[in-house]
Image (tube, rainbow, N blue to C red; front, side, top):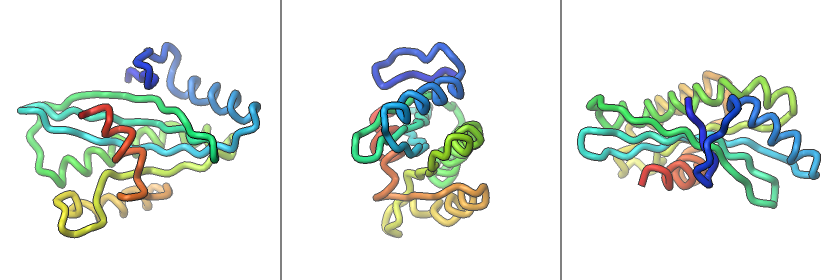
Length: 157
């Protein structure tokens, strides 16, 4: 997996090392951190662009993120695509959760799924919520899911 900073710079070390270095640096500078992970996707013709983000939020002082982008050529329904986004977020959360526990950093998994039933993405809400909560992660959906609906969204549009 290739991770990048928001600037476009490629992260040269494994993402776990990069996140750990960031946690040590930011806590040393006096910030309380929270990590939010989310994925968004965009259908572009026969290709689906996915962007997964790891957002490190400094309490009351902004934040920064790491981005992984990939593409799929599979045809999928909106519900399948929403659940694929959730799966990518969970895989990422699972890969960093032990590190975050070690440093006592809170973790949230954000799903780009609307809680309003009039939106198409709502079809996946119960499945996504069950999937994320059953893995032991804190779940956020729109409008609170800024990691997926704002941060990752910028990378696929």
